[in-house]
Length: 560
Image 1 (cartoon, helix red, strand yellow):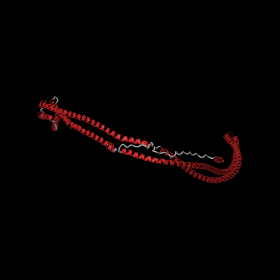
Image 2 (cartoon, one colour; image 1 turned 120 degrees about the vertical axis):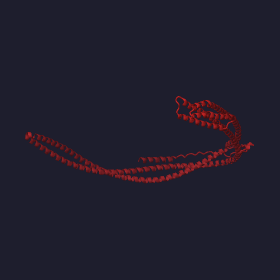
Image 3 (cartoon, helix red, strand yellow; image 1 turned 90 degrees about the vertical axis):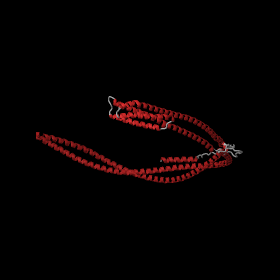
Image 4 (cartoon, one colour; image 1 turned 90 degrees about the horizontal axis):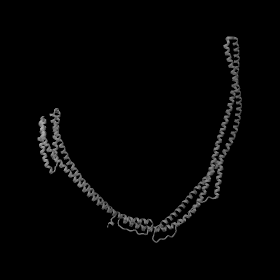
């Protein structure tokens, strides 16, 4: 019956049980936490507050007695207190009495147990006597400054009634402590009980959960193991075994579907195997034909590619020659321009040299005049010296000056003579230079004529190279177009051959793959087709020789 449950229902049942168990444990935990909280609240709100109020009441009553004693001692001592201090203490005693009365009223208004009611009655009687016989008369005596009467009341009725009240307060405090301890012990007992109950509940839930988990895992993993085994057998190509169906749940439906799938696969693989053998035979014939066509097309494309390459190299060399001729033409034109400029420069140099020669002759004439002036100055200085000598002692100073002027005139004459000699030599050299410059100008004219002829020759070479380059470029474009078309054809043939070979390989692979399946009562009709290896076409000897000749021509063009 359980095997007929679906996996969904099994999971719902397991998860539902776990959820109910968690809810039960959660409810128990919350319930017992609430009980513990109420116990804690009762301890704090009732018992602890009562004990604190009793303790505070005792402390205030002690404070009252202390204030009464301080007031009395302060007034009857050797150095009595001032009235303000006494009045302040009396006021504090009154306030403390009111606070004690309020605390006692609050304690009496609280809820007490039956055993504590008798103590409360004693507390009420002692409180009444404490007020009427003790603290009340003592406060009245202090107010009228009867400190002796106040001392007697303090040591008598006030002290006795305080002892009785203190005993009642202590009895109530002990009763509240006992009640607090009882509440604590009850809480501990409930805590241990909850611990035991929770442990038993968790143990039971763990056992039942483990059983449910084992049942659920077994009901899922066992059919899955059978399904995995069947899938591995099918994956290995064994379609001849039956697949058992052990349940009616989803896994049983899976096993039934796998059994149906195995039957369908068995039939499909049988038909595929038969078709594969036919395809493999046809693919082998296509591959052989396409391989031969590919070899021939590839050889033709290779030859045309070499021709296109060599034509392109020749066109490149012719283009380089044209560029070189054009460059030489530019250089020759530049040289001719430079020669023309040099001729003009040489003409300017000849003119300049002539002007220099004329200027030199003028300088020679000027120097001759300077030389004559120096000669006449020398004669005048000599005459002056003679006249100074005739004058005797009076003309001695003038004779010295005349001597110096004569000396300067002689040196000027000598310098003018040397300058005249140098300028005369410069005039002769300028004349020789002018003659050489004229000869150089004639040579530049001859060079200019030769350069013009060379430029005309280079123009003719450039024009012929340009026409040749245009013709070879046309041939190169035609060959390139033929090469491109042949390459495209070769690529298409190569693709067809590759497709045919791929088809043959796939057919063989499919045949081998289908052969891995184990089918009932089947035998193949053909063996797998054999692969055909293509060989690359060899380059012909004649074509290689043509290629070598074109390369040698290209080298000659490069050398030119």
